[in-house]
Length: 242
Image (tube, rainbow, N blue to C red; front, side):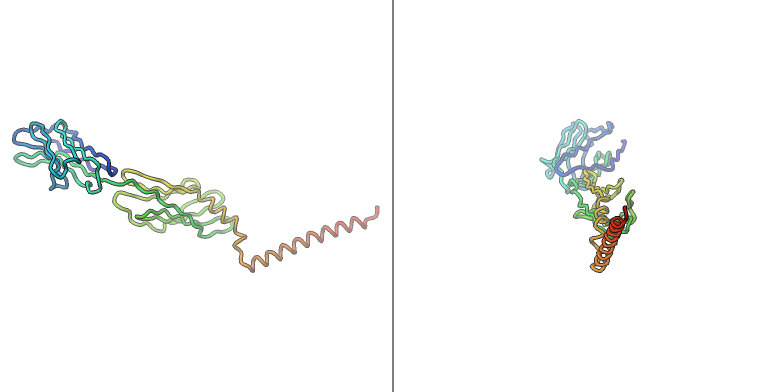
């Protein structure tokens, strides 16, 4: 018999999973039966040579097997339904016909995206971007100048759960945080260049008291100088003979 190996089948929790036989080569007689097995040792149901379908006790009410095409339907699947499902024909020997790996997952949560100012100069600034979920997080450093932003360092990456991932990437001046697994994905985004513009615009407010004093004195002297020049010009015009 032809053996089919279907490596992966992913499903959302509380949905229906249909494992359908693709091969038409399954032929039963009085000495053979067809079984669906879960994780090798547990039997879900069987189909006899006359196409009568029977479910075993632990699957009654939450699964169906169909004699016409040897398919198995799992209803309202839960995490505990994840595992290996094997279709076998049992006669004098047991022969595997098809194998499925079923992974049941919840929809992913929306990742939190935070942007913190790290440092800045007169023409650029560095930002720490953190993308996090309850399970894990990624933290990266980005540098922005007047033209564009770029990623300069990835600080940490905590290991994700099975078959889920968290990705941070930059597109133009917008940072994207994508949380996904095999059955769903959710994204969060922020325009990080705005954070640099805010910080650079507030540089003056971050001066120390001494620097503020020196700057204030300089401004006063400048204003006095401008007024003095203006008064001198006005006096010259007044004393000029007509």
